[in-house]
Length: 420
Image 1 (cartoon, rainbow, N blue to C red):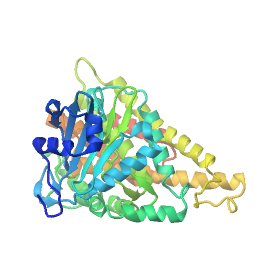
Image 2: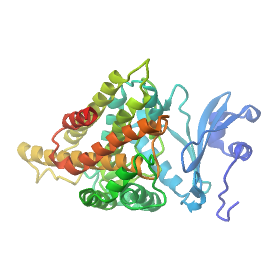
Image 3: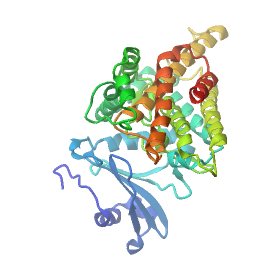
Image 4: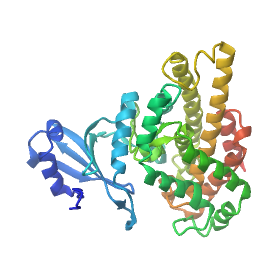
């Protein structure tokens, strides 16, 4: 046990921990000999236990002081559990239908007890690989993003409350630094952590490292990521951070959360949908050519942005006389001016979304952490082909994002890249 009171739990010590924690006993009951515990953490950073009892169930997540998949040679601040628990509670307050409830948080043990998202909930990325359509996905995720981003921004908060919240999340510096490294730095230089589908993509990875235009754009995005405290973002909103069924969408794992640029969240989600799209040819077989599924993915990309845009503007209109101090009503005091301000704001947010989305795509192909969408394609040459198409599209998007006027235009560019 560490001198600060932290100790990693195993299945046996977890039972003792539960026994001594009233908030967990109240959900699981006292039949401790009937607890079923399963360790399911497939991520890089934590232990995750599902605990099922006759009277209830929970998930226990404990942060480790190092990156689990690499080991103690890459230390990692376990205090990130505090930021995850705080973000889950705040985002849960703003979008309760789409965030699992937190029952218990122990700061010393870096441990969160939260709602178990029971089957048939699965990780969205796995559903996309299997070719499952989720008819409410765009509706749900746009709702979550509109509410969590609007209500934590200066469009709704006073500058005093916003600064206080920014200051609190500034402590999550280590996970922000990890993002800075793996998204905005490593893919553009030689790094021991980078990998790609070699030898097929060696030249493509080298081309990224030598692309002057790309590096100039990435520097600007990195600067925004580090300097723009726009809203409380999830910070890692890819398709592996959502659990879904046909009628439920739940956002999990906000341990990278901090006050950053809104477009980083929207871009992460849309960028990962586009990666899923480009991977589909690698999952097609005799029984299913995946053509209609690819149409559904692109429809979801369009709906996600358009619904987000619509809902965000509705919130802005509803709260235009609220506490927010970004655009004071006595200054922005006529309809034409208010319209101009909204257009400018949303145009910049759209460009940020495309830029961050593209940079998240690039890092998943030539950086340290890849995605199962591609990795699960057995035929290596086929996988590389799918990845190359995604990479070429992402590079184009990153460089040309300011000239793109709509999400429909993004989708027609994707279709053109696929035709080549």
